[in-house]
Structures are given as structure tokens and as C-alpha cells.
Length: 333
Image (cartoon, rainbow, N blue to C red; front, side):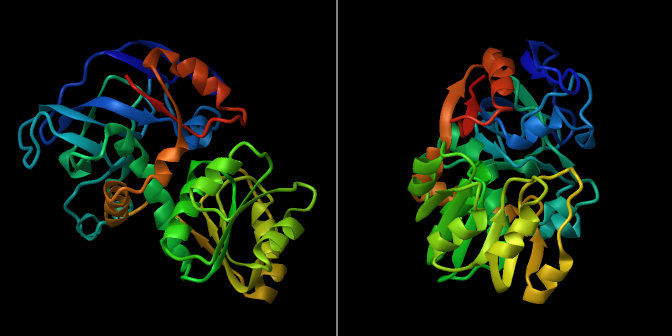
């Protein structure tokens, strides 16, 4: 099959042929219909922390058609359209039964979406309703990631929300915050690229003022934020968030930052600001993201700015390493 593979850190991905996948016991093969390029994919090719190996196929935001089923698989059949939860798990332990699959002892991140076919397991497949497209199925994962963060933040209806970063996760946070009753949602970034998209997805205002990020956000919100969502992952933003949060407020970390960061803990303590981290999502949140799309929510679809062929992935992937007007690029193998 055709696939795009990891070649090494700081090296472009390569397009070529690799062996077709064959399902083992308890496995199935999905023909990829759509796969999103995630910001974490970009990080994986630049940072050894993620442990990518030569020949790995990236891509964990995908949906497709079940085309082959191994022995011992039940509940699915060939021809089913599914969105694949990229959190590998046993499906049987207490954590899996609860839906918190990220805490399964057999947890791992499912890749394989930058290809024509991928092997997965039935407990990772969520069947798509007839009115939810494969493109929709590929954006459920970032929606679920954002929803998990909003749920963990303790955000309440009537809160003032500040979102740092207008990438797909930040925009998805704006969507959920608006949907869940936030009184005000302000998105802050250092460029203007995603202004219209942020407003379309639920933001009341979009702030770009690198010279005065604290003051500009406060003016847009009419005060300090009840909840600050850090959706970028660069050093310095926790400290900035401490300034932007109200007394007894919350900072929720969604941005992936692998570099050391420092902040003044006394400033945080003196305001009794809570710092909360968010990892992945639950099965129930994945289901809720799917339900939002099935119910007709149009806003999340605004994240998709381009759909490209598999052979174009190496070139486009390199362009995404620099900020541009793209938001969520989907691959159509």
C-alpha cells in the first residue's frame, strides 16, 4: 500500500510503498477515508521525547471503512464506517470499562493514518451514523481532547473564558465553552490568521497584541478570566496565564510543551490559582463529540481548511511547521 513514513528527526517525511496490513486475532483493518494532520505529529518529527522510529506511519486522527476482520472480532463487519479512537487499550480492565482508556496498563497511541490502510482493534472503533461523514469522523479526536480539558477545568455557565492559541484545539475549546454556556469567550493569539474562524466557532472576540497580552485580554473580557486555557505549549504561557486569571481562578493546560518552563509559584499561590493538566479524553467524551456533529453542529467543520492527497503530505507537512492560514488539514488517501 501507499504510505507516508517517518525518516528521522528534522527530516521530511517520505511517500512510498510499504506492506499491506493483515489483521491478527482480535484485530481489523480500516481503509483510511480521512486523516487529520495534528500539531503533535509536527512535534513528533522534531522532538526525540516522542520516540518515533524510522519507518513509523504517523496519523492518529482518522476514520474509514472496515475492510478486513481477524478472528475473535465481534460487533463490527466489513463495510462499516468508523472513527478510530487513537488510544490503544485492552478493552477489559477497570479503566477501560470506565471509559478512561488512557489509564489502561496496555495504553499506547494508535498511529497509521498517513496510509491507505491501518490495523486497529474493535474496542477503538466507533461506528459513524449515516449522516456523519468520514471527514467528520477525522475531527472527532481533537474535539474530544478539547472537551476533556473543558470538563476538567470546572468551567461553569456564566464564566469568562480566555483561550490562549487559535490552533484546532484552542478553537475547539472555544466551541465547547460557548456550547456549555460561557458568558464570554475570548481567543488570544500572536497572529490574525484564525480570527474569522475563531469567531465562527464561538468566540466573542479575538485578541492579537503581543506587546500587551495581559492588558489586551483583560480589556476584551472586561476583567480577569475565570478560566484560562493554555492551548499552545510554549514556555512562559503559564506565567502569563497566572496574570490573566482572576483570584481563585483556573489555568487548564492543553498545550504540549516538552521544554522546561518556569513560573513564579508565589504569584500563583497569592491568587490561589489552580493549575490543572489535561491528558487525552474519555470514551464518553469521544461519544459526546460525535453526538455534537450528529446533532448538526456546523462550527467544528470550520476547522477544516484543506484536503490533500497522500502523495502531497511530505510537502504540506513541512509548510505546516511554520504558522500559516491553515487550520486542520485532512488527508484523503
